[in-house]
Length: 443
Image (tube, rainbow, N blue to C red; front, side, top):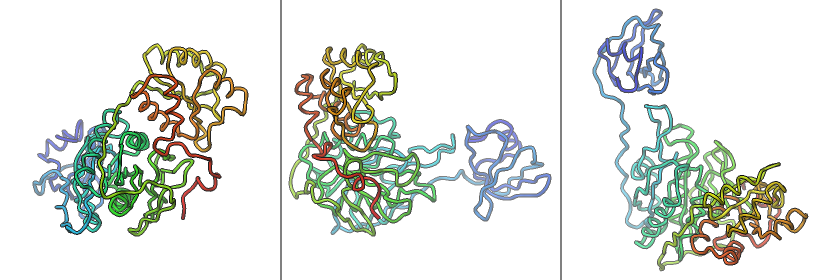
């Protein structure tokens, strides 16, 4: 019996009952009637699940069951999304590209886990509000959780974005899992050259089949930004509060997921949010941004060197890990240092060896907010004298993606240093802002 096993499966098989049938279950202390629901295969084999006429599901332990009677044969429950709503030819065209992740997920009854199952087309059909914002075109780039994204998939996504814009899309929305959304946003920011339309990455912290899902508001807000804003940059659009009232727009190289499960998990770091979206209106919070244009052509510069590693500096951290990375053929190292950009003396030998072998080492800070300043203390000055490249106020993950991009174009150490210190896509701020302007969400 699909989705049931062991004792539960034997009980149902003896009664000739299948998932989707309406059954009568007689217990030692009562009787229940309802639809036999799927049971996660990896859950225990001692329970049946019934959907009662009032809509609630109950679990019944097989040891309490006296008999099971099939009242009416049925079919296993299926998810049948409604047909896409009609659109207006007067509205702008927005492309939605699906990559998977929680915004495009549902419960998998085999495991009980969330599974990337909705296509981008299904997203459009289950959020009919999109029809009043834009004419939607959908395409599926891949179907993976974001922890399985790779540099190759970054480039594939970038090519689909460029294709959509060059074919006339007013903007592009990329549905993406939240775990590594910031990495993909940074990669697109570096690789999309000549971008003249908005590109918004969007996801959800809770799957789209859950009552508490943030998927609908996030997707509606992302499409609104793509259709109505004059920003020609890569951004991330996600909840700005725990309520369903506002979404924030974060620059693709200045954003981090700062909470494992909250709906407002994403924050702009070392930069204020670019915009806020509320009640269908886009309110820009900054004036310094690249303006969208009516004409242009986007090209994809997708040369990334994947053999770059991010290492966190910890007390007593050994040089062994750096030396192993060099011996394994890694071409670049980003260190998530302490404070202003420091690493313990126990890492010095490995750092020297890496640089001597032509492997650039970039220093960022694990403090999240603030800027690396390696000239304040002797440790930082020692690291600079070895040839370590200061990462300014770049997030460690942004620095990792940037070093991959830079090494995809040059291996010359001086050129790598020059490019890592150059602001290429808004990843480096000219100056650090007071913390009260860059932390927390606007009300």
